[in-house]
Image (cartoon, rainbow, N blue to C red):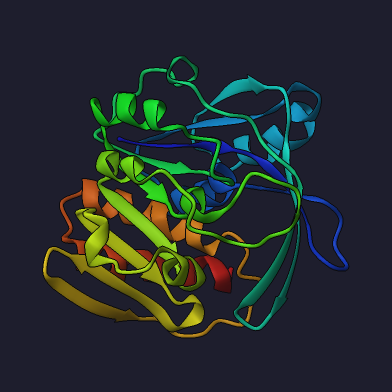
Length: 252
């Protein structure tokens, strides 16, 4: 079994009503296709629970709700693979006591900003699980307004991460991948595919472009990736498997 943890968000895209977002929701879309044992731990403000939680629950993976005080919110637009975002509101900070016990070997943490998962929380989780982590939690500062990435993150965080996922723009901010000291790093290139860094090995995994809304594709990719790693796939094999799952989701 694998675990998927993070804050839900309210996403606003041009021409569409507000929609549930965040790593738990988009990762659950991949889990629905894969039909494997998993648990989701999701958080949002109590006032938004009845609006944001049901779409996640309907995807079929068991969900544990953690009550929060605030709900993250984003305005998002795309020009091809290029995404422009504005942060409208920030989500809650997770402390070790906020995370229920999960009978998992792997967990994926999907932060929406840098402050959501402090070092002490990741350290506590890393003592029990192999932790996969979305690089948004390294480079997204915790303030509202147009999203501007920076590298002002605590490097001690990296000691507790088994797998790190970075989008191209996040990798450019973080810098030398080899210097991070993380066992497995995945750099996603949008519709072009991804590059897997594992030890001294670096391998590109291609993808075929699918002309659909790509919101949440990275979250779905990582959910599928850790499912494959938990099943015994190599890092490159898991990335290939995750690429196929995301393509299937986008074709819908």
